[in-house]
Structure formats: C-alpha cells, structure tokens
Length: 176
Image (tube, rainbow, N blue to C red; front, side, top):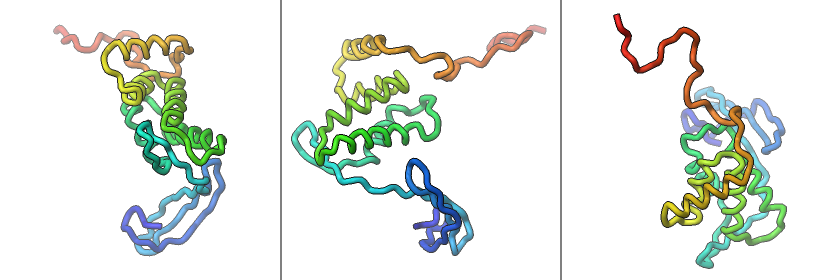
C-alpha cells in the first residue's frame, strides 16, 4: 500500500475493522509516520458488459462511479451517497448471477437510483444515456418524473438563507 503523503510502500497496520463495505484498515507509514486508511473489498465474480454495438468489456465499477459523479456534479449529495449508489447497483447485478449483463440494464438501474435521489442528476444522466436530440426529449423525461413522489423540502438544500427578523434585504444600498 502506498503512503498518500510520501509514496512509500512500507506501512504497518494499526487497526482493522469490518464494515458493510469491506475491511477498513488504519495504517502508518514507516518512512514519514503519516497515518491513512484503506478499504479492502472482496472481489466478486467478474462480469462482462455487452455494449449497444455488441462489443463486450469487463464491468468497471470506477467507470460507473465516474458517470454518476458527473451527473451529480454540484448537487447536494451527502458524502458517500454516490459510493453507496454504485454499491447497490453492483450488488443488484451480482444477484442476477449472470456472467454478462447489458449496458442497457446498468443504465436503467442507474437512472432508477438517480430518479429517486435527485431529479436534476437523473435528467443529466438520462440526457447522455438516452442521447436526447432536442428539447422535446428533455420535456418528456421531466414529465415522466412528475409521476414519482416529489422530494420534500428537507431532502433538498435551501436556495436562499433564512431571513432574520429586522434585517434589510440584500443587494439594496443602505440610505444614510
């Protein structure tokens, strides 16, 4: 394991804990003394993804996570929410017990999770995945989202700070 501070490959394990995501190890670099954490996950059976054009490639968790991160950029997601979403999708694929899965299935599972988590992230992902051609495609996707439950105010970040009593509106110059 490489030290994230100096790049040294020699470290000692200080603590090991089981978690729902794998084994968490707290390490200390033997050169610089910096401490860092690592996560170890059991490798599941390898899956192949059948692309739209018929090509086959190995399933890449990192590629899925990058696509979801792009769709969720600058959206109010809790730390670890994207990783959890990737875990859920990968687990769902593993449960199916197939050596090959279609890219379409992965896209549909991803859109399902995103539509429940954040509507803007869903539209971003769907626009690329479904290759929207014009604004009508966006309109139809948004209308289809209207069928699901709307997120509550507590699920989204406020756009404006709460007003304080006795404070003047922002942006207006103070008269003297």
